[in-house]
Image (tube, rainbow, N blue to C red; front, top):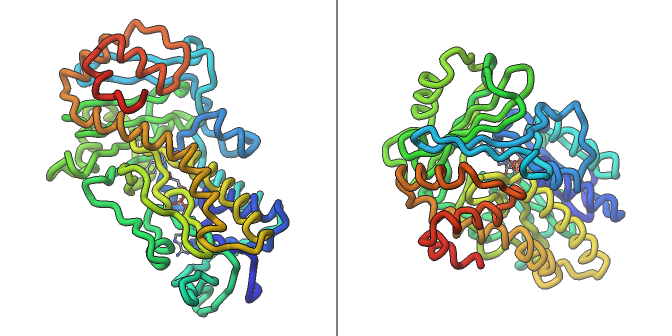
Length: 392
Ligand code: FAD
């Protein structure tokens, strides 16, 4: 470790590794630090991603792909199933990853591009001079160090402190948090080519239960419920109920708990000498809670903008504004649209969900895009279109 770098990236998740890789490829001197001793472990993720978007960043590798998913089966509260499969969608669907290997592969790519990677290295504070971030304080093997940089990238995930240290309000109200619990189970006995979703206020208030194939008859079985709607109910209890009723033969071999912010975008993700990316910038999707692809997309933009700012000799908030503009124009727009849809669906009763599922049963989806789904919903329910008018 040196005393100074062009950029220091805090956190080696998908956001941090892609930022570090992109910046290193642009010739920057990059330090990527990760507080854990093993990148990618423990995971807090159901590990589902869209194929097309993933492949924009990395060549698929069987070592970190557990399942090649051909479609989804969505169950409404009365058991009505809507199937969206590859044959009818005519398009790409998704992968279920092994993130313990995937996250390491991404960090490895950043190292191969020239970034210095340090594990068991925790950022403990920022170095701020005047009103500009000039580096970080870190703890490595019990020793404190100060390391300076032109830009610090906060890629430290959901529990991000980097933004807060820089005076950016990244707080999420409990009501805007999807509380999640998940088991990796053996003996799942599901079709390994499908992801399953179970909706309904009894199974998952203002959320859903997912079942993602992990290969070899294993699956991630998880639940996400919205803080504002779930009252006293605990995600883990609802998940246990579901398992007991629907998969009594499954055996738990790993457990994950965590939160996903579903409140939409925050006001600011840059400061003088600082950029936030991924979950640290609250860039996950308010409907699905998915954040891997958004984190990678934002990381790429951040790496490119950081390189440009350093080349131009302007790492002030103004010099980094392009990052803010570019991600809001792409990822931000999708998040805003998802928020409108989420706020409508949160108010759906089980009867609404059942009637929607019935109206979608015979729809021949031409693709699995959100817009196609909404168009089908519109045809089935004109009132819904009014609620979703902000999207059009
Ligand atoms: P992270 O992956 O959280 O990485 C942040 C890294 O920073 C961590 O490695 C952490 O150890 C490190 N770090 C934190 N603080 C410090 C520090 N002070 N110093 C050094 N290092 C630090 N998304 C999907 O796309 N698909 C899914 O199926 C999906 N399922 C999910 C299920 C659950 C239960 C949960 C909780 C989330 C799920 N997500 C899913 C969301 C997804 O996991 C995140 O959006 C994604 O990991 C964000 O990547 P990131 O790099 O921003 O943050």
